[in-house]
Length: 639
Image 1 (tube, helix red, strand yellow):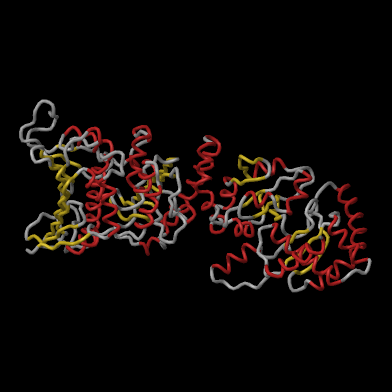
Image 2 (cartoon, rainbow, N blue to C red; image 1 turned 60 degrees about the horizontal axis):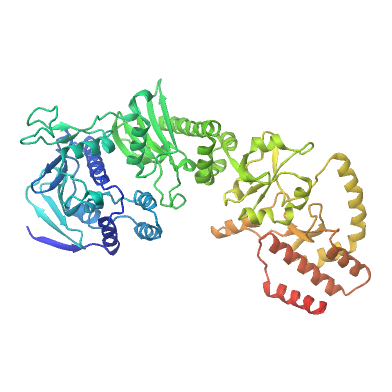
């Protein structure tokens, strides 16, 4: 058959060069990647054979074989799995079928530490390319189950590859590496050594559910002697599914390796959660909370979900029906005993047993996080820093677990600049007479802390939650209370602080000021009517001359902007301008108005106060040019 020569994609070629120059600090992992790929191929064949009775594939002895030849310095990883067609080889091996490759390469170049590079590489399906770290040439021979012809793919990683159709090829895939010379200083071990192969498979692939065999040596010497009979292949892995073994039989290291295999992460998980459900519907789950958030957690194409098995038979990756979206970072395996092997994603969404698992698994993960708060506060702090933003999405979507999510959530507050607080701790610290849980939303902690809305609360020592995640703008409107205490934005409605005696005294003073400022407030409310709903005196300001607030049930400006960014039209909401009667500028403005001063100048000064209040809270001016002109005129008159 004719041999065709192709060029790698530009991005694939760049990635190959990075592989060859050892992105991985540990070259041993190439074998883990190849064995994992072979295991996936066996899973797919088993599933395909169940679905397609006329496939004609032999599934009686599915396995992986590793062969080494020290004389020719070759290593071959062979499986009798699903195999690939000619088109699949071109699409999957000759190119990188991942739209995120460009972003990956950019981040990789920006990464200065090898550990960071390894974290990035685990996020992409590039395991096959790791072969070029240890090989001068890679040859792949494959035949898809049910087809008569095979395909051979060969490349030295220099920018081109060749593909040819072969008449005879065994079912499955074999990858043969023509190994580079041994260089222990560069981490290039002797991968034709049987002892080396044993160690790598045991360390990385012992949990693979299919037998990983090593072909027998023709003439084994003393150094490489083993218990296997002459001429009989040696099985290198235990094949015990970790989730089916008791906790006492499995070490943390084994759990961590399973996590790395299914998540393609290079760091140990933050938490391991086991669940065994017995009764009318039996299933086992082994779930992992990662120690860091993936960079694409909030992108639309993020692959979420856990692996689903039925009686240890692989069914599907990324089964979204088993966990809610706000727990999409959780990785792991769920093995059910009573589901159909032919279950589809559409059926899963309607299956009653799956819905039971969905609720139970969500509660188990939330319970695990709650336990972490108590038993391992440092690990919990890491969890919340990495995943708190996405967990809070559950406050909007999971009404059944809303109280549990609130209980394990933590927030920045004015109580401590370095530590977060739970709502329970906030309530325990509330001052006598304080009825509500106060909060303020904003883009950054610094912006929120410097907001004029904070002044009265800071003066009275009342704690305020500082909410700076975009999702905070949404969930605070959906959660009415916690432990019977209403959540109140300090940028909305009237503020009524202090003891009953203080409130009574303040009310008397307020009525007096209201009479003194009535004329000014009426004038500004009328003349600034296109911009504000009302101009009134403030009880929340102690230093700033003015601030803008929303009515209690109005949409916040930030939420209004979010809706518009999503293409939703929302009516423009006018806000309220509050003036600080104790501020010299406001007092002087009232005096000028009372003395019959230039009304236009008074109104323009009111406009400036409104613009200053908007800027102080991080808002945007509707007419910046007019604001600058008014400011320049006032400055000129003051000289």
